[in-house]
Image (cartoon, rainbow over all chains, first blue to last red):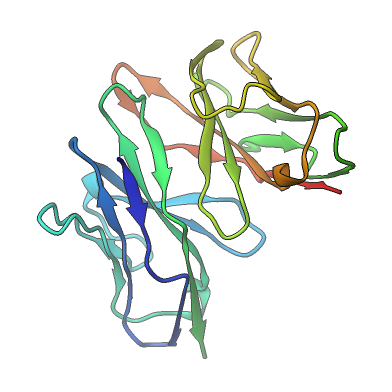
Length: 111
Length: 116
């Protein structure tokens, strides 16, 4: 069964510390992975997708097919990074890009 | 551009009452999604439309939930009758499908439903 797992519900770090939000997936096909972010009182929005291989707001994520992981990393966390982060998998095998989301990780960056 | 518009933003009803949510996608987006987000969980797809056709409604509880997108633009999701367990946030999203390529999904602000 297709599944996305985010093992941490809450991750708390101090400003300037490195941060890694974990995401593991289970999918039999060729996965397309995303990270979505929801800042306080804002709507859910795309942060980055693995096929873009880009860094957004200092965040990067590498797809590791061997470990079936897509962890989100940032070397120096900022207070404005505090938000809910959702890892999502798009089913590309005739499922029309249907997204399966993880449960989310709340990132709290303390001053 | 206002992005994906949803109304109402909040709704409180008593159980067994009907309720409807409305969504207007980004102009030109042919694909529309309704998601359910329970507290502490990620969104779960309820139904996906491509233009006016519901192409994936496998997760929609059809005994009480219904949806329509008559002209392939805006959409309405209805619950009748509502149950206590329906309390959640209902998200609408839209995207532009180009052939087999699905572009980024843009989400609305959601409707927070409370069933008493």
